[in-house]
Length: 518
Image (spheres, one colour):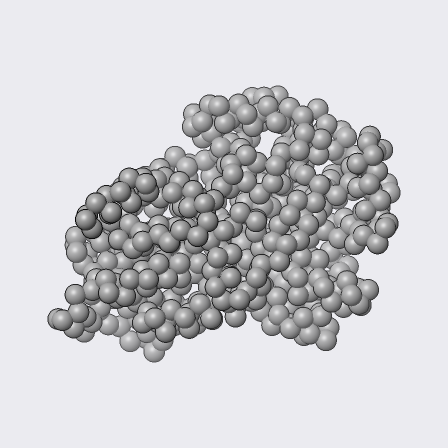
């Protein structure tokens, strides 16, 4: 069976495979041109949103009836993400970031108050600023060198990398236990690129004191509203439906074999497709139709299976992380500012005190490998507010992330009380290895548009919700849709991504499009 648009319908029928942030952004951008595009979105899950989901909670026990799962929040620079949130009445809330890295006097540090570890590595921290400048000056040559090699080349102590640099990058970029193999450019961008940085470099503490982050609103409801809005505009969204394989492709069409929720297989033809799925899933879908270019580029992306456990085992959490202020963890203050930081962390002057949101646990057998956790009751606004107002009478909710199933012999999973587990989720996550930035990222522009196929997803650059949104918009733009400007910073980010991943100069393309209309 073949599904075609009616003969009188001259619109180009685009299929968007995957309804995560990338797929929804792509469909939205195409839907702005109902006279030119007919859009079908296919999603194998029963809901849209990809990893950006929510799970129900016992409100009487935890203080809220829901929590976000998979995606917690992000940086204030996530302009496209916030633009979508605002359109559907889901405002992102600002929070002051508190982190707790490591355990004990020899392994703990935080951005909230001066720790003994920060005092110990003060020289390395000061030199790290120069290190970032050298990487920037020598881009892209030294930028592609793995961070572990560059730290060694600059004579940083091994412990500085293991206890401070690697955990910091792993936690906030989602690089997991591949962090030592991350290219140095990604580390430099994290601190200095206006479009990607999460905070400024601090020469005293590495991570600034209480930088502003944001926590997302109810993602399940947000994506539900987004879906309903797209469907009201004529976009067909088919959940519980899977693209089994590409039957054939050409310069102006793509035929897909699709399986519905009942297991029935049908063939459908489209005027183009955007694969908003992970690179290895894209290769599987392409099957025998994959070209040597696609096999080479997409095959260069490496993914790892991680497990997130949502639970309320406070005993486990306290045993593995530093969850409260302890005087013995504090270094002697060297300035009035540091004295204020200590007073804040102690809870003086009606401050909230030391209430970390992010945590890391280091394996003693291999200090480069970690586990990560969130205290969601200190982070997600719908949990944080009732906890503070009630004087912490509600049970806190935690999420612990165990990285790379192939290393599960290291995991502390068995120490979590099974009776206190709320949910377990497996995620297939990108490993930001240096090879990814040599073999995948710079070559994506040579794949887009060939055989009526385009690609989108955060894996095309770095694992961020904002990047997923921008990648979907860029694919739609490449297909001929317009980019609707709403913010200078956002447009600049979009333009840079469009040039990097699609090889299209935004300003030049806009001039060409204006000229073609005259």
